[in-house]
Image (cartoon, rainbow, N blue to C red):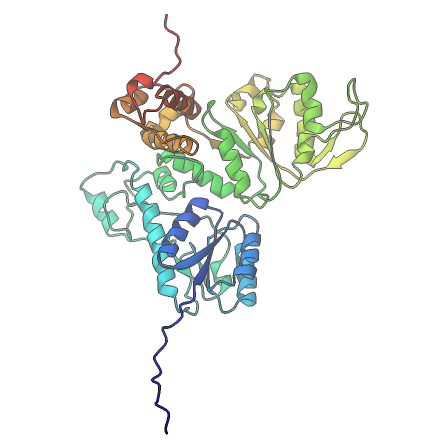
Length: 453
């Protein structure tokens, strides 16, 4: 008896989870791109540096890697060259650097490009919330602008060769300020400084889209990869330390220490030992030697806040370190070589202090090689609603999220904010406490802490 033939049913194809690796120092960019890829059924691994990207690639064996146009620890062109040699089958894309050719396409290239473009559109939508720059509605300048196309940097670029990327450049996003097509940007009637601020890629640490905020981000991204000394000037509470931390995060020193010291918070008698360190028995009470803050920052970044308060006697000793990279501990005859990038900050006009002989001019010129100015809150008051939302969301990590009613927001907008962003944060924290269990902060809870005469 012949066996009855059993029909062979087609088996459902087994779907393999696709893995993409996103390498970028910009956490906000990584998160947005990861969310889009996850929606396309990708498994996403994130890396904030080149070294971490190598480790993730070794363990995850991804089908694709998307690399931002700047890495804080490795030269981008070298990283791409080595990665292509090590993983020739991985679909490799990078952001920025317009004009490069496409690499051999992987089977999921279109999905990757879609995710990147959607992330780029999200960035553009954020920039479009900024107020448009004034421009004439008609006239010969507008006609000339319409007739003059220029290349707009695109955040999505695929590489045929890792070397095609050229030198690392910070990513840039162009805001559609005028309602013109995105391939056009009129130049005659938009001030040069406005165009430069618009194309800056805002740092995640800085909230707001005002031109002054975008200009700070632009300057940080330009100077961060270098070891150039930076002086940050701005009023108290305007975020100078945030800028210093961003400079360190975006630099090749990001894996080394970030050491901050407030020169105004330490008594003058102890400040020298705190900065330069001391040996055992160097002075009364020095029962053991101690490494100074400058030496602790070796390989990383030294942030000297309120540098204008540094005593003149210590300014000369700091100048020697800035010039030679060598320091001498208190009570020691030997010098120590230290490689630390110096970032300083002050709320006082150092240039004027040098004219008054209250600050050494030679030290000032050594520290102010590159100047960044943080604006007061009054200079970007249009960002206040975004700042309010940011601080309330951050408070909502540990407590129920609260929101402000329109009358409360109007009261906040009418305030002068002499304490700048730091004062706004404290006022909102006080209001959230006064609101108790209520989820809405009313104008009654907005207390500026002013004494009533």
